[in-house]
Image 1 (cartoon, each protein chain N blue to C red):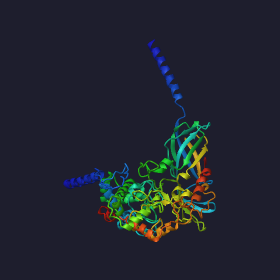
Image 2: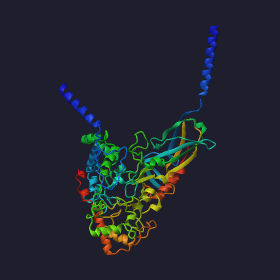
Image 3: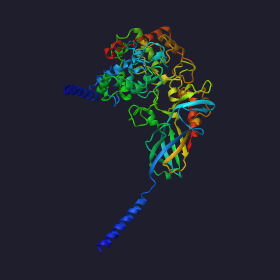
Image 4: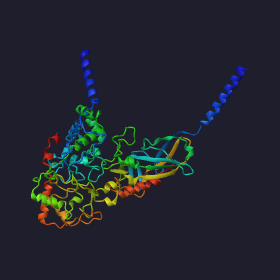
Length: 240
Length: 335
């Protein structure tokens, strides 16, 4: 009798554990945010020469900050990913977003740039943050020295100004200031590889810009080009 | 052999300990002139003798420039109230700076720093000249590596901050030195504090005009430091090649605006304006008497002044009385 009761007890325990295990599958998983760098339909590689708007260009840097991230479900309800600022680079373009059930969400909202509070730097600044903080000193630098705040997007490279087909003139697009924080809202495609996968078309960033003229932009010295570049982000970043 | 090894190890331990601390927290006794408020000292950079000494050493050291050809002192000379008498300063390889080098005094009382107010706090200011291509052209990271290769600097940084040279400790040390550059002992200060003989009759007349509703210089040049620290367009040009504050704010309404400078020691800080375009105080006076050029952002307080030559000379005499000889000769500011 005792052995029979014990067997029943073990069976019951096993059943409980079995169903418990099934109920633990709530869809929470590590979710990354990725940006695939492209030039039109081509893969993007630093140092390679591309044709952008008829001008030969090569790139040394294409780094940018992402902040103000939130995920939205089908009803438009917003779940913020608090306190997250990412520094995306061609070499570090897949970064942890959060542990979450991404099946609940269909859209992602974020800003290209950093929050006004972080950009202010009257309290914490890039010299006071720990090395692991994306807002600490970076190489290449993402801080302005003559202005408070961070470079939201930093592109460096060479551009062919003299038209001989070989890029030779230093190109810099360093954008920032709170006025040029660009907000994006993108519906992403369902994937099972743990990523919210986006695509960044570098060529699209320069739509409407003549790189033989506007090749050195640091916001205040060419606000028109800086604004055009910032506005182009909306079309440059799409769901993969 | 064992004895030598022991001595070597002891020396190594000593060096490590020297680099690790303890930090010398002896406070720096900042002498505040009569009538001046206490400046705000940031919580993460208490003013200590060790930090001021380190900051002063860095200020005079060419190690912070890329080719080690210039130091902060190259463009900020004590006898000129830490200005340099040039239209625009020359950086490494004689590159020409963007703007006229400002005088360095009483910066401890500023919030936004730089002529356009772009830097949010004094302790970040040093990064501008150190990293600017036309000035010292050295990344702050490279500056740290250079300093840490010098054992005497490693000890000095450890003594001041308990750690090696970093972007934080470099900027804070320089900030500490800049903070002690307080000027408040001019003849005008002595007059304000009760010495009626400190100003000449002409300077007194000029002072009265300066603060009068008719001339209204004090509209912007007010308070103990003769500046309200606002940003103003004084109609220097109809169109400004250098946009001033709008470069920082990207606001067209800030085009041509620059921080109202203090007028202390102004007789020594020629040439004047953000671009050093006026050689003498007489030229500056003529600009204000004439009322400035038309610019959409020109301050409404800038308009033609009805003051005769004698009155203009009196105002200039008052401006001369703002020179603080003790500041220009203070040995505490020397290397």
